[in-house]
Amino acid sequence: MLPAWPDSSVSTWPSAYWLVNDYYDVRLKEARLAQLANASGHRFLKLNLADRAGMKALFADHGIKRVVHLAAQAGVRYSLVNPHAYTESNIEGFMNILEGCRHAKVDHLVYASSSSVYGGNTHMPFSIHHNVDHPVSLYAASKKANELMAHCYAHLYRIPCTGLRFFTVYGPWGRPDMALFIFTKAILEGKPIEVFNHGKMKRDFTYVDDIVEGIIRTLDHPATPNPAWTGEQPDPGTSSAPARVYNIGNHQPVELLHFIEVLEDALGKKAEKKLMPLQPGDVPATYADIDDLANDVGFKPATPIEVGIPRFVKWYHVPPVGDDHERTDDAALARRHS
Ligand SMILES: NC(=O)c1ccc[n+]([C@@H]2O[C@H](COP(=O)([O-])OP(=O)(O)OC[C@H]3O[C@@H](n4cnc5c(N)ncnc54)[C@H](O)[C@@H]3O)[C@@H](O)[C@H]2O)c1
Image 1 (cartoon, rainbow, N blue to C red):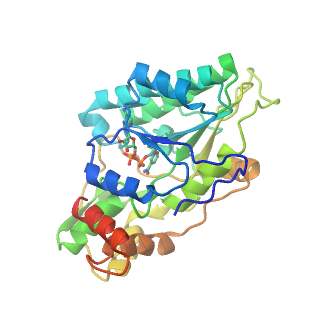
Image 2 (cartoon, helix red, strand yellow):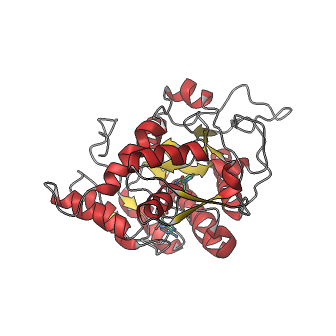
Image 3 (tube, protein in one colour):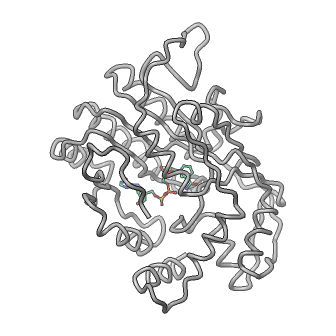
């Protein structure tokens, strides 16, 4: 369910704009869209972020004042296979978002960054005040580039920009290329699951509803300059420009093997684990310091995997017939195409 729009002066949801590309089965994306069909004020336009003229017209025609930009080429491993998808969507596309925001003089741009920007950092928890100049995948580099580009536009044109570094988002309607989907499907089919870094992985898994709440609350708190910022000792997380970043993570790193145990309990079935080495581009652990988000925005994600994973499994398991036909169909669709 979408939460209520928090600002009563805004009577409509901003339109959602994202290309239904085929990184994964578009029928899952269409099924998600169908959930929004009756959402008040929601409008869907199919538009490539990299289409410069189309993006210019989008901002010129729609009187956009606040932007939540989530569309991107996601995925660490795919960036080793198809790097140009990342430069097209995440660099060219993000450039068009910034130009649109500049000409529309938007009040606030909130955009998705990623925990992957921490790359080679090992000091935990990961803090926005740490230097993040050592990405280990092109995906991470593209997200870090977004933060730099946004800072530049905040400095030059005083556009308030907030980058949100999401930490391993999971939950109903999630991405089928992510571990929870892949593990669930394999376990149910009695197939082995590949457990990378021999299970010695930790992830700060963050439930999707917490991400949504964090985005909406942040949108209502436009970025402002930090008066204490100094170029003598530049703080990477804030600026003399209205630009900042926040971590949105659960602040609870979970061992991958424990994650699998909780999934096994929710499914009522044991996994056959195939232990594998760390994948190129992956990092062994993530752990979010969320003090800045909590202090500035007044919100901390708090859904444990013991709650979130069973919710995902319940959604995944919706039987092919039932009382709620619309949801049943969509869930069955998502399951078939994961
Ligand atoms: N899911 C996670 O764990 C996670 C973690 C960190 C950051 N993020 C970021 O959060 C955002 C949402 O991720 P998600 O997991 O929902 O991924 P997703 O792939 O489900 O959603 C991204 C959407 O962007 C669209 N898109 C891609 N290129 C486009 C283009 N050129 N033009 C228009 N639309 C385009 C895709 O069609 C897709 O619908 C992304 O920016 C991602 O990098 C996600």
